[in-house]
Amino acid sequence: MDNTRTLASDLVTATTLISPVITRLGPTIDPRKFINWFVISYYWRFLLDVGQTFPTTYFTNPKDIITLEIPNFSAPVTYAPRKNLFLNSTIRQIYATFMNDTIVPFLNISHIAPFQPIEGQDLSSIPGQRTFVRSYGCVVRKLKQGFSAFIAVAVADYVFLAGGFKVFCIVAGILQKRTAVDGTLVEGEC
Image (cartoon, rainbow, N blue to C red; front, side, top):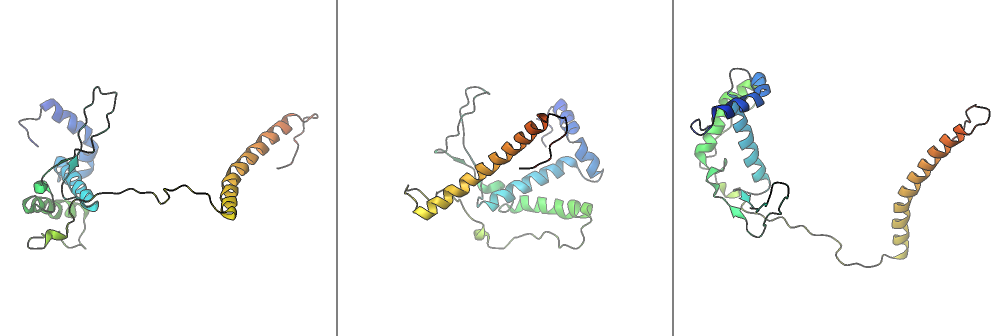
């Protein structure tokens, strides 16, 4: 945290917001370092899971805060992977040390091996930029065959007919109970 650029009032507000975390972690763990470790580790792990080694953002030009603008997906802004937790050995060592020296003892986990540095390993297996392609299985309209069309319509209609019939039975039962002349409840079920 940059103490020269952080206002004292903002620091007090942040401390108040994370006070539940502070009480749970106790005096041995710096809550800001823990939250930083958790968020950064999760962020880079998530990017790695979807095949990214660097973040990509898309800018918008919002006219006001109420109107949400659609991002310009044709002009992505990519950033260098120099802050990637898995590619930058200095950052990786800092986070691994924090995990091994602080998180693992706090959780009282003794049956796992400490996080090992990956120096000297081939990092080319970390995937590069990937593109998600969304496609649909049926893009050409055509009529179904007779029996197949009948089954599809029957199944879809059954859902609505069964639900409507159940609502009808409930309403009819309520009306039947109200209209009993002698005041006794009429037993019966649809």
